[in-house]
Length: 430
Image 1 (cartoon, helix red, strand yellow):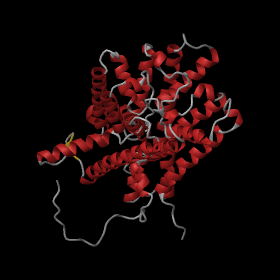
Image 2 (tube, one colour; image 1 turned 135 degrees about the horizontal axis):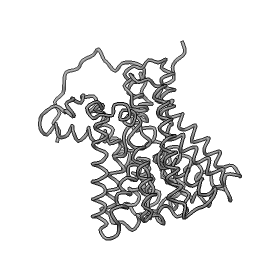
Image 3 (cartoon, rainbow, N blue to C red; image 1 turned 135 degrees about the vertical axis):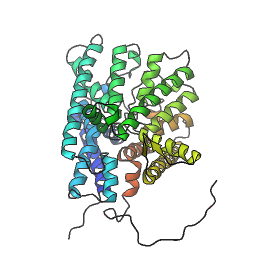
Image 4 (cartoon, rainbow, N blue to C red; image 1 turned 30 degrees about the vertical axis):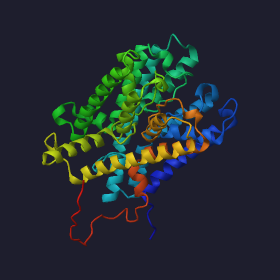
């Protein structure tokens, strides 16, 4: 009897394979004008596939039209990669998922196993194409005074794909700083980022149910926590950088911290408090089953709800539904593991590049782990080893913190139940 391949390993190898192919394509002589090192090609391929947006080189002056098209394709594949990989997992499981399989599908696709996966895949692709087409046409209007002809068309398309997939990669040359006063471009970019960060399950639910009372608890949580994070981030950044940033750009930066990474500001000139606010927003990230990263806003919501319920001594209830102990434990575990990963990677980079500011290193680390792409400008200054560490961090953030751990799980296709029961131990905590 053939042994089934662990679905967790499928996810790891799937993303690694796409990153490897992308690296090879970017290294082709006709992909760049003057060549690129293997490490930079690997870094950018990982950044594109993991829809992060960090880059060690300037895209428009480094890559030819073919190279830019490869990057755009990698971003698109990265944005929808979890769907196709999730479908592969279902096929490997023969259409049946045990407890471990369901947890994987829940993480990769966002389903408890009661989803019509083929129908979901079709709708996800359709939503992606419609939203990117909408963003493309709005970009044509917003950028018509800065570009003309084929360049206007290509940059508008590339930017729309990058924005909806929360990638944060651009072809503007100087980033979006020159467009800080372009209201239409900023609002369109923020809109695409926010919608992409909601998650396909939420979008499909909203389009199908159309009424609040018919929405799933998951949809309600995402629709509540998303504006709270956006607005709180906007006001905090506005006050923290008082006099240096207007309200529109504060809102734009708050929405970009949801794991997109475009920036109209020079973050190296921001104060420590503002960078801390960005770090928190990036760490939380977008919604599950979205093109965004982070620990996910639902994880943060469940974590807070569980903490408040513990303080009140009551069950964790949201929207008249009780959150299971398993979900609470998983949310807290993901949060803690994410913090551990962040501090471990920050420590490694600070050892490799001790001359860099620890504050900037931490922002770079969280940005990579949460697949955001915001940077205080230190990415090109990183050593080869730090670039490899950050590439690994982007990969880790994209496949999921828990997937990386569960790949070592031996009995992945069996129930976690155990016939042996042990006497409970009393350990003093706190």
